Length: 165
Image (cartoon, rainbow, N blue to C red):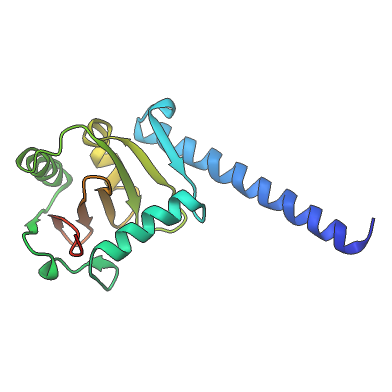
């Protein structure tokens, strides 16, 4: 076997190991969040599904300094929060007032090392505080229905629809 063939095989094994490790970490995260593994799809970073969802979010809303620039999103709703109890209540109120129901949604964190999760909205509502403390900023969104809720670490929670719809 030539050196280049060994290099290719070693790179493949390393990629497989990384994927397995990322999947195990994501499954552990779901367990910590109290979300049943069978109730959630996991899209690992740098995969086509994850890239598609990140692209939808980044192209659907105007961004400024790592958060959506809600002043440029017509009809958006932004509310302030000071504790996780408050954000939980505000999140539930937004879901109810916007009639978001129990659709399949995606949850994404600021850290590029986290996977994007796809699950029923009911699971997000039930585990919201645990989801939020996982990272600085969190986006809960539904590309099919065309909306996003951003929970920003400096105390705001905003809802809006894409600017290019």
